[in-house]
Image (tube, rainbow over all chains, first blue to last red; front, side, top):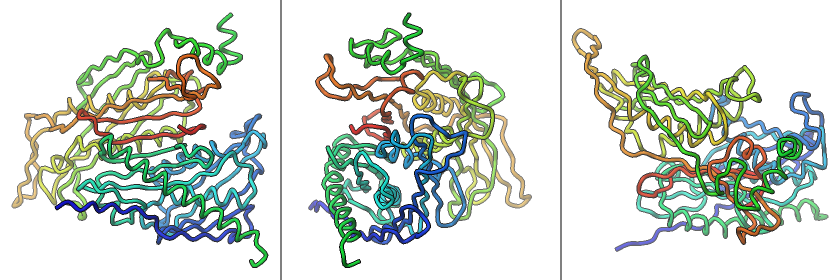
Length: 218
Length: 251
């Protein structure tokens, strides 16, 4: 008897904006147990070699919890840089740099999508002009072919494929994606559809967070 | 006249071409450049391949060394892929430590090898707990005319297919490693292929009704000007093993 054990709900999300007081904008975002802290400085001083005359230079620095810097960290930095570049209106601030510092606090699966979400929440807190908001979602496909939305670290280890999708808020289409592992085309489409509906919930969570920031109670 | 146009307004130059359905080098939007792959050319390496995709030229060399396997995975060998963008391959590449793009490409190669399952890491461990192979896979770009991902993956897989490793035995009593003279090929379980596209966001297009136009196998000039890039790594049966998409506009 085949029971379709598709787990299609996101873990509870929590976010605190403005925790890092010296930064222009910051957020501590957690999805389940995966927690990421992000601080945004900018638009500000740029190093001459990265100065661009018609737009701001987006720099991302990612640090993992154990401090050993490796190629995986560079990969995450580049992914975040490209995703943030697409969302930020960099042309408004030429010859400056917007620096996004991300610190992994705990990894319980879905780290890359937590980093993207936390980066955009920090950019909102810093009042950087954005073209759109993004919501990143991770999916895992296990060996039996079941789909797991927002997998924990255990589920990710057991998975035969993990997929990260980043959706944008206006047209709900995909800005960036990264897949690792074997998945056939049908499963890919299914993961995409499942992630899309989860992204809508993430964007609603952003609204709740921003409402809290500007409400009179806090 | 067209050279000046390309130098001053590269984006406009390319978009004018795309709107008529062809590209500056004469290809249609979905045409790939002809690829030639030659394996096993470098005799000093244990496995090698040269790939030429249009003007993009990439060489892959594999050197195998012996090492002690880790205690966490005592029956698995190691794969260390590394891509080197030499200053000779493009005027924009300078001498120095690997740039972020080079490092990202190296992790991309590693992800493809692990995700596709083309190699069984236990095949790389002739004597568990004692001796394992480390494959240092160096992909060197000699000429960068766009689409390094496809060329690098093709070179890597071709070099793996040409790799020959000797037999290794370990004598427990004498604690000696002995390596045979005869070499045998490594078992490659599948051959992943990478397809990359550059995405252009056009206001209106006569050719396609969608807003996004995909260009297969982009050249360097097309990549520089593109809004986004997207790559798929697919196995023979059509399963997708690694995808990578980043860029300006949503798809």
